[in-house]
Length: 74
Image (cartoon, rainbow, N blue to C red; front, side, top):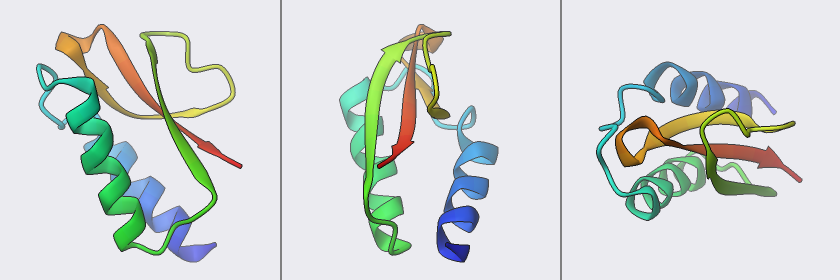
C-alpha cells in the first residue's frame, strides 16, 4: 500500500509534466511501466476525454491536453 501511495504521489505531481502532446498509448505504456517497476498490481489505466475521469485518478494528459490517462484500482 505504501508503494502505491508513493507511485500515485509521484505520478500526480508529474502527471501534467508528461509531454502533453505525446500520443496517449505511448504515455499509457510509460505510466504502466513505472507502476510495474514500483510493484503496483491490480490496476487499470484508461484513456478518457478530459473531464471524464469519473471515480479514477488522473495520472497524465495527452493529445495536447484533450485526453487524460486515468488510474483505476481494481
